[in-house]
Image (cartoon, rainbow, N blue to C red; front, top):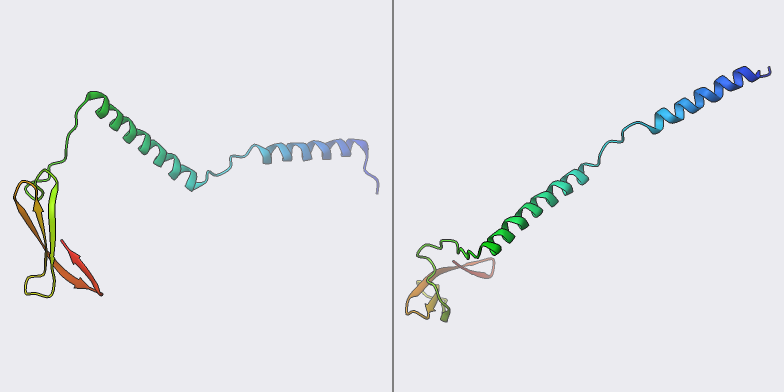
Length: 111
C-alpha cells in the first residue's frame, strides 16, 4: 500500500497543525513562583515605607509602656536556688526591674 502525494501533504499538514497547537497551549504557572512574586511585592512595599520614614525625618519609637525605662542598663544580678529566683536589672536612672526565673529542661528561663 503506497501513500499518494496528496495523502502525504494532508498528513504533513495535520502534523504541523498538531505541533503548533501543542506549542501554543498555556503552561500552568509554578505556585512557588507566584508566592515568591507576592513576597517580593510585600518586601518592596515595606522598603518604600521605611524609606519614606527616613526621608521624613521621623524617628518614632514604639511605645514600650512602663516595662522598660529609657537608658542603658547599669548592672544585672541573677538569684537562683532561693524562694524567689529572679533576674534583677539595675537601670542607670536608679530604677530596677525583676524578672522571675524558672528552670525548664535544665535551662533557666527569666522573663
